[in-house]
Length: 228
View 1 (tube, rainbow, N blue to C red):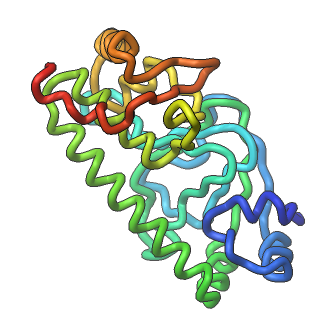
View 2: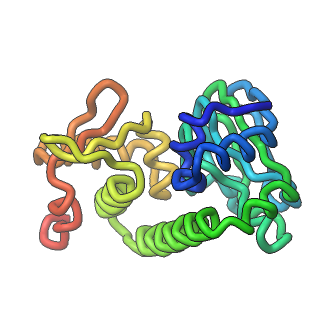
View 3: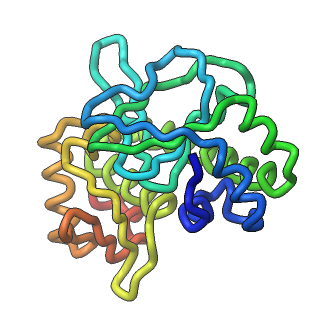
């Protein structure tokens, strides 16, 4: 199927391509819709495709030995995943599940590898992999914190860096995140996450607005050594 150039240009991997290049790659995508809570792929499956979220939202999760689910990331429209397995031939490190009715574009291993001949795609891919390495290190650092509020502060700061959009009043995290999702990402209980968010709102560090999160003072989020 052909994919609109305007949409592909929003995908970081293809943002620097010329219209002719976008038209060529756009013809190789396949589209599929997933109901809410359906599995796109499971941890330890062998990946054969790269995926782009066209509409909707997915979560990347790992199942702990205890049975508890840990959320590693969310991907919204225009974001991609699954490329690592196509690069090294390994299995996928986590499961991906639709958290809303979601439309996914998939690109086969062969077509993905053909794109690697383009220096612009290679450079963009290296940037994204570096960003994901930094996010992984930040996640490890977050999990070393023992206090629930410290974890929420660190998590919200990470989300500002990875998904935030600067506005006159602060940094807006447009992804719709529930207290349960924040808790699962931070590795704490929902009750602890709710208390932490409530306290940060009282401190004037953030506001919940129409399903999004407005961070009023991003730098202050990490200044918590003497407060908790």
